[in-house]
Image 1: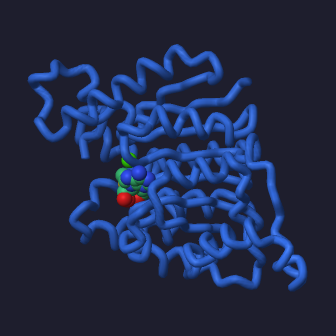
Image 2: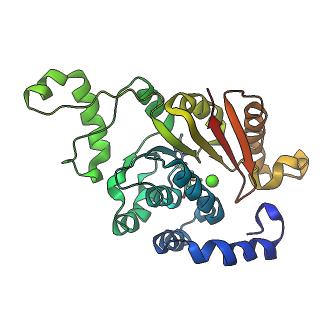
Image 3: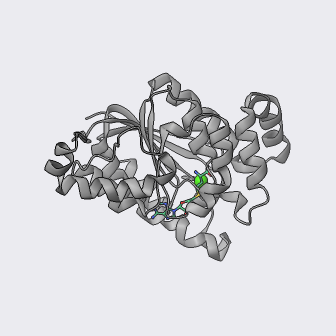
Length: 267
Ligand code: SAM
Ligand code: CA
């Protein structure tokens, strides 16, 4: 609750004055249902989400990728901050957590933008890079996105059969086709995600990484860091060091929530 500011009062002041009053009611609903979940602390911080919403709108982002969905706070934020015909590829192996927030996403009327893929993220990103488009005909119910995923892969290798049936699947050049990506999952893969997303996101597009100040522990001596936070802290610090030298992106570390690193692809 103190956040990176290390001041409970200041964090509360920002949230109560600037964040909660402008938080859409559906996002508050997801925050409320998540509060009863044992891993509630994993939800994206509302001030981080507020900044992300502004970035998405400034970019006029339409095609986005989200890695690490949990109950869907940042996913719903993305869906609410993008146009009606946006397409969000949301990847997480934990469908159960996603289904906690799903009724709220449906009620908010933005589910049609979301293609939830129940999977580890790396294989999905690799498929996207092989130009296996995961777009699907609109008559499919989005509830069955994982079925669609398998069906589509089948159709890729049997395209003449589907052409005969009058169903065509768009082969899409995925490289450079995304406006925005949000990464909020396994910290040991941040660099792996960065390499792939850098190809998938267009020049001028953004990749945002969450938790890059790891509760402020990045400046604490290792012995002062609680045991279970040590390993991820090391991965985050490696990521921070690497990204600071990566000339393919402009970066900005914003100390909101648990710290986010905003990367803008420049070449
Ligand atoms: N952004 C989410 C929100 O606002 O509620 C929080 C995400 S939570 C911090 C991390 C999520 O990453 C978990 O739901 C977990 O299942 C997922 N995850 C862990 N390893 C993953 C992987 N290899 N690929 C994709 N998602 C993964
Ligand atoms: Ca996070």
